[in-house]
Image 1 (cartoon, rainbow, N blue to C red):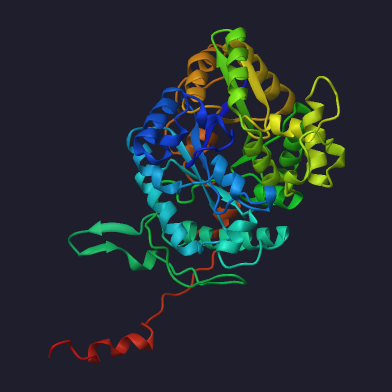
Image 2: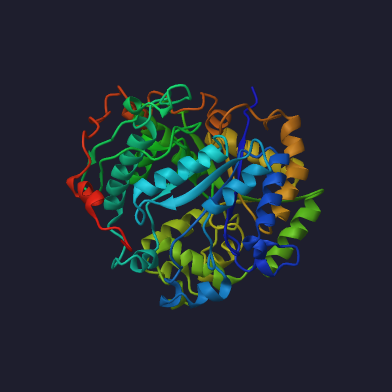
Length: 483
């Protein structure tokens, strides 16, 4: 039986997301990121192409590792300027019916209580088409601008995120019962107070005693996306995620990553296929192979090596500005760089030793994922081959130019995959969770979040306080202005 491949479009509310320098291309419209019309047009295009969702990345800092400053990032528009991703969603939902929206926010710099309400609001407004990409943060500049000296240690960030999600699950899943809102006009009761519960959370990082401010949304908890690659990150994803993103440049590495993720899911007591795994990839396609390769060469001519090295330095945590472009990668004093480049070189048919210049060339288009270049049929062959050989579920598609790269995929690749039975012929009904996973609109019972429901093993419902705090009793005794 042919396996249906899942696809998200990968974008960001900025100019240069993964392809630095391509904003100069005459067909690129990323500079319109400030215009709501850009996003509504893109949403309609993606729904025409039956994409599962639009995944919107985000950062709360600048890439300032390269050259020990953010000067190059600012000059290259390397994910700066960048606007908030959540504010785009309701407008795009209004012009679509099925497209999902994955939004990125970090757990390190915002309290979970107001965040829970914002996501519930979006889930209501989209009729259940919202996903949340959980990030713990990786840019030191973000921590400094939030009053911290640096990011907390890696595993400590995940410990903090564990409690962050615990609070959210209690609010989303355990505070309001499904039938709490009764709208009884005869009795004058909109909500039954006995079915709205204070969560009484008192933990290491957060104290949240009260109720969730929003009534239950279609999904309650949004679809949880996660992209942790470390052992601690994969364990966190196995306990919480419903979609996991990877960025493996080769089939061998992706196959190993997918195997690890599925094993961790089993260790977490979940079905190893309860999660959809998407690999970062870029597709450059046209009517023929020759046209596609010519387009790829043209795009590369616009790519900017400084922008690429700015991104790579931030992702790898080493300042590549300290090395000449022709410096052999073996001279770079960084295990992260060496392991990443070893992966890149394994994809290089020449098998030669790479220089810093080669890292810049690789990073010009689409970040650190693979590129598929060719006609619609050629790209479809490659995508199916990767799925068959790695057990990945789908791809998170970055763009070279926007919306052109997505339009080309819709026009040239989608018809081929559809004809082969490898692409969804229509959207499934219901929420994003049901469309993506086919198991209903709410979290399955075996998911960690479900255990916080009323009556669940981790439910921590407390009795409603019988009186208000004593400080409120004096309100009526205050003098009235002007009397």
